[in-house]
Length: 240
Image (tube, rainbow, N blue to C red):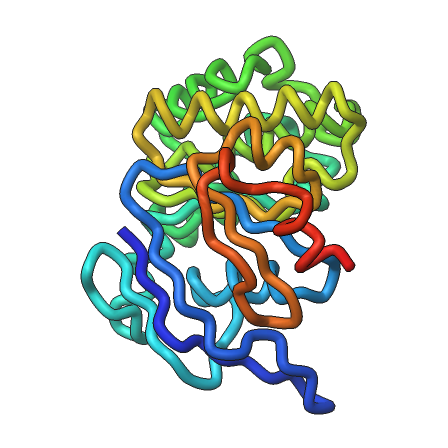
């Protein structure tokens, strides 16, 4: 599904965000990436779908190398979930979900949120999947943090992606809401056969929901193992 080879990225000022990352993600897998703030997790995810330009290295998506020509196809097949939700506060939940289709509909129509009946039904179905059908016409700023993140997930899955990238989706949520979001991502992973790569800080959540856990520190992978093989000694490699 996804293969990353010797990925490198240095930001202005000489900060090495990624230092030769090699990583394979299998189709249908739920992979969690653990690491402290500044470890390179966000840069890694944003590099996959072209939100961040890389300095060197290669990324292969469904066996094809990502380049400027292939990137739009990758973006159509990739959903992104953000830590801070990235919703438009004065829009309803359903219209926020419909923004997930902006790249696949008429630019003129999307400017005025003139979506088709079929697209609106897709948005309602996505909201039903995340348990928010009854909040479809509530403004985003009327929703709780957990509900807002579920709208973010619905927006990510409306275009039926094959890969879902979640950048610390539960960082700003309380434990109960965080567990609900993670169980929802796992449900989507299993029921819709969507591959998930999820950045996390919480070791417990990563162990509970992941098929595999990768540890990242200072832009380099420190470990890559099954949850059952992850212990305190291994975790201490990245959380010193």
